Image (cartoon, rainbow, N blue to C red; front, side, top):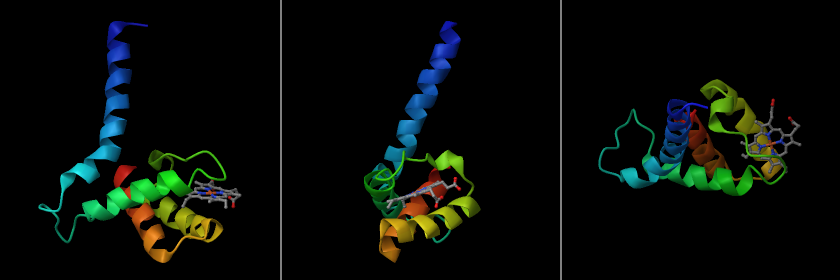
Amino acid sequence: MSKLAWKTILASAALGGIMIAAPAMAGGTNASAAQPDPGLIAKGAKLWADNCGRCHNLRPASNFSDDGWEVVVSHMRVRANLPGEDAKAIKAFLKNSN
Ligand code: HEC
């Protein structure tokens, strides 16, 4: 494999990490009505990691569109026995990261 290809892979791996870490680092200063709350997204990222891999492999955010996650999390919320607030945070994280 060429050096460039490896660089691309490493760069996308790094970006994947940043996508999960960024909302936690963003703080609360630039929150607006149109943007999802960074705190909610960070909470959702943790809840997703803690709950959504219990019964099957974690499905990455890129697997579904916003509408897809809306449906999937509504179903999985019941299976996982999650409170509505937690499901809302997980949806915010997945929709922000897909
Ligand atoms: C209690 C066990 C359990 C938990 C917890 C759970 N799931 Fe699932 N999940 C399942 C089962 C069983 C299936 C396969 C049957 C089905 O689709 O209903 C599934 C299927 C899926 C699928 C595939 C659906 C498709 O159409 O391809 C996705 C995506 C998914 N889960 C996401 C999640 C997410 C996100 C969470 C966290 C909110 C979660 N799951 C938590 C049991 C669980």
